[in-house]
Image (cartoon, rainbow, N blue to C red):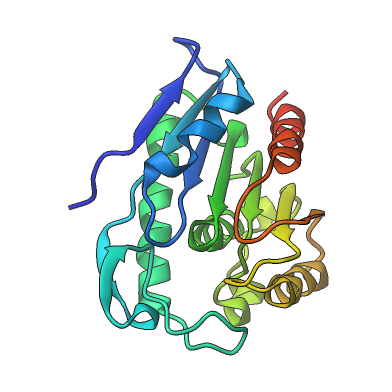
Length: 217
């Protein structure tokens, strides 16, 4: 059973939604301060919580995780079933927003670290055109299946990719491999590097605000 997402909306009648996924071991509260700093009154922010599961790379320790992790490098084995299960859950959150009156092309998927991987996985395969996707300090999962699974509807989706140059959890090199795969598939990517570790900084928040203001204007 997955806990209900946190919802933050300044305006009683938002006209856009951002579904924002936390990283491994965190929960939906992790980006509440950032969302409040963005101060976008027409946006409803949905901050879901991953379920608890045992994570192989962390000695089987149980924590909130969107899928199991076997390693943090480019060639690491991937939990395909887990990624697909989280993708299905995010698809259900998109459907809920559409049912509440927010068109799919007014919905952005966002995520940090493992959450960013699920955001990319879902957005690039979704069968309705979305407004954009933000991939923060993350990588593209299941790269080999993208070419055959990508949706025509989101071939031109705006992608915001950001990474810290001192990230020692998901290396800049790992992120760049993902960037190159997306480039080869002709996606439009806004690439940002920041002098930080596996985190978010003030300049990135300002750049995120600019991206959301443009894609959800």
